[in-house]
Image (tube, rainbow, N blue to C red):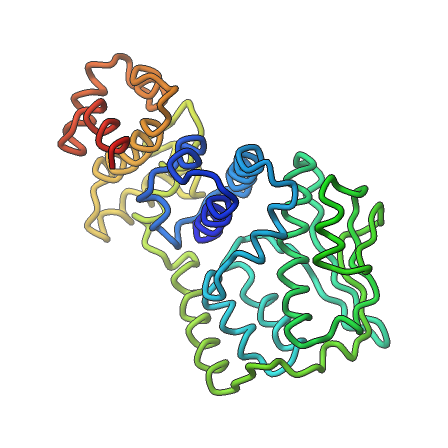
Length: 330
């Protein structure tokens, strides 16, 4: 969700209204506050496509890198900023990259005399999403290189697609290093680049932030509470929603018996988690003014509007219509 927050902030900076974007993505503002919540990569790509469509910005990935505040990817940003060398910075990103996503987005080969950095290609995604991910990954890494004034050590920045509509922005950002229609998306560089010192190197701060990132790893891993994992599974599953304990247990790779015992040990009631998750989904759906309330009821698996109305008021203290009007005026 931290990545989603960054996407929302960058898209708003591109001129899209926050409320309009959240409605289109069916995201409730409260969901953006759950920084450590996890969602399927396919869902994130869906949000990227919505952001591209609404902003009309063909180079949104590059512009996102330029618009993001330095603290946006903490603690990774701090690790990068205070690393001793470019190589240390890139290795820190590689080590803790799963704090922004479970899948690797790049890998580094430190061979002599040329180093190679290769990015994931996401070929199953629409062209705009492929470009966004390549721009976001390579743009962020190139910003580290520029911070060390190491552009002269970069031999090429390659993209496994043809010249995009925003090719001038690539030239502005990467200079004459950009290459299109290449076998891989990535960067080739003189291996001496990795030894360049960074301007804000601080070994003590780097050690402190690395310890913090390591502790955060434990929090983001399977040691998160079972209740938190259950709630996320309920929120992010597609329609038709299976809110049964057996269905959620399958999604988490557990037996129903293990799930029941685990929640009991944490003092959490499964029914309460279901209601909390459905309330979050309902709020997100109600932000979409083009979606009728009865359509939202069906999305959540309610047979009729009356039953949904009663449930929503029990969850929030408001009727669906009252909540929609409150959000529209707030």
